[in-house]
Length: 121
Image 1 (cartoon, rainbow, N blue to C red):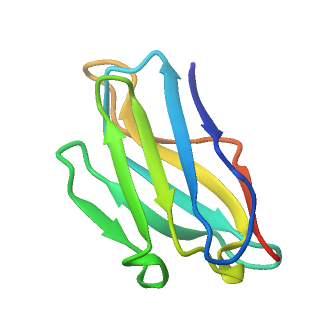
Image 2: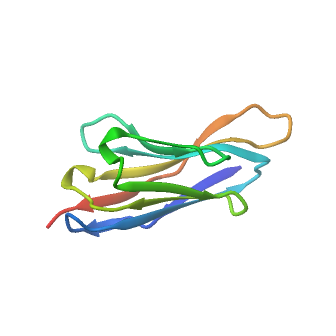
């Protein structure tokens, strides 16, 4: 089995910062991309940021210049540093990993349960 566990969410004032972490564990041969998505009430899930194993990154336009994604390949972890938070960043943030469980496995998507981020004064 594979588990993705997020941490670091919470309540923060507008303009504040939070750092999310996600740890992947279980039977994992290799992880290709890791990323963060978010889903606000009544809205579709959207990509926030993604990072490849080699370190290439891609961000949603709404978070460019404010959020930074990084990963530790040795620890199977991905992080999201969120700065200058806005009320519209309020959502459940979910960790995603595209990985192979065994050497000859195909890649599959795995998701965490999510961590709530609330930006409010």
